[in-house]
Length: 497
Ligand SMILES: Nc1ncnc2c1ncn2[C@@H]1O[C@H](COP(=O)(O)OP(=O)(O)OP(=O)(O)O)[C@@H](O)[C@H]1O
Ligand SMILES: [Mg+2]
Image (cartoon, rainbow, N blue to C red; front, side):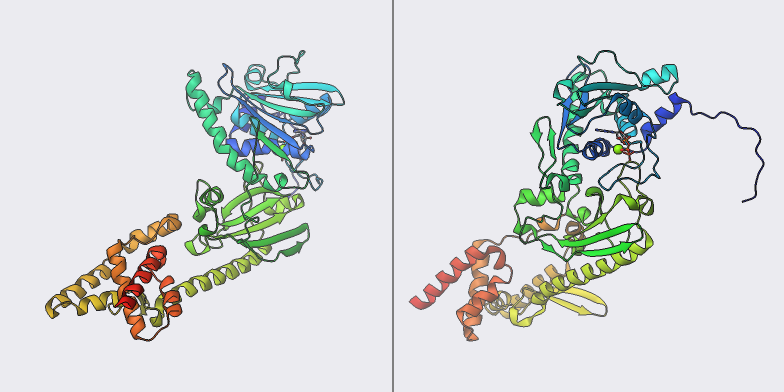
């Protein structure tokens, strides 16, 4: 760069009122804002963190109370300064912070009045950033209240710890600033939506040997492990380590159990409001705290075949610059060297899921197995066609006079030709687990059972073989109890004859 001579400088101190308003809009949501405050509590060594909301009061508030180390008044004033620490400074390993901004920017994103009350070594201090006060005075100066009694939630503070108190919740009113009941409803709804995010983001801390207890209005939140490691049907691949200059990246892939291997509640909890299709992908943790999830970083599509795959990536805070961690701790970018390694992980996952699907498809293709449908692959296309030779069709056709028989096969092939592929595909991409074969009534099922049974017995197959085959094929598989009953009754009738 060419050297430019500078002999004068002019004051360009930011306007407090303008800049502090600008800090409000760097893209926090209530979830990410609360998480940023909880990060600070965890870094301060807290083990019990309470979120207390008073939504029906004339002046509603949200308080986050911890039992961490607390701060002296000097520490507190320093902490209230936007940019309290240099992002370039090295931080200790368990420190979840980076920018010296989170406390302020997260709070202002939700409210116009932030009070921090902290107790350390028997001394209680408080400091307030009130955006209306800053607007009026246009000064970078926090208020230090003379009297702390009567500050909301102060009774929850233990021998040491900190309260972050949000008042003037102008961003959470949903437009109902003058309707207390409606306003409370909106805030409560938003808080309820935050719950799952917190259970997920901090699950590793909540599962620790010395766990962090997160309470929402007195109710203990349960960790939400996105890999369902407690479920014995979850498949965990071995952990891989990538050693880089600024630290190690640890990678581990998991395959969640099939939805039939867990309760409906557990399945829905794991999928969340977005559903399983959108929850597959990488789960990136920075110092055990989840930063982002439910994306493949553009390395692969979120498809039905990889729906149960989730990959844990762990990084230390020493790699923040390489990963371009943002102030909100909710986004990151892949360093190229890691991208190459993750591409390999994805290739392996894709190969694995394709094998599983091919195995399932095999059953349909295998002629020995009497499928109701044929899968025909030719000229780069795949067709599905009802199997006219299936005994359920052919035996019935045999009982018809020749002219009706042709009509019957025409009907069957029409069903095959009008398979609603687009709708099926759209449904599969959304909620595949809710798509089930249609139920057949007793009469239809019984006709199919009898036809198959007769054909098999004629072919001298033994009963064990017949049962195994039928159990694997629809419509019998999905109505297995009824099928078994009909088989027993049919055999009884045959023996009686
Ligand atoms: N609950 C708390 N208990 C003790 N100290 C706290 C607490 N919250 C904040 N602090 C202090 O205030 C400082 C400023 O917090 P702030 O969240 O603004 O920045 P940070 O955590 O250092 O970095 P980041 O912007 O990445 O969150 C912290 O570094 C910490 O020293
Ligand atoms: Mg912080």
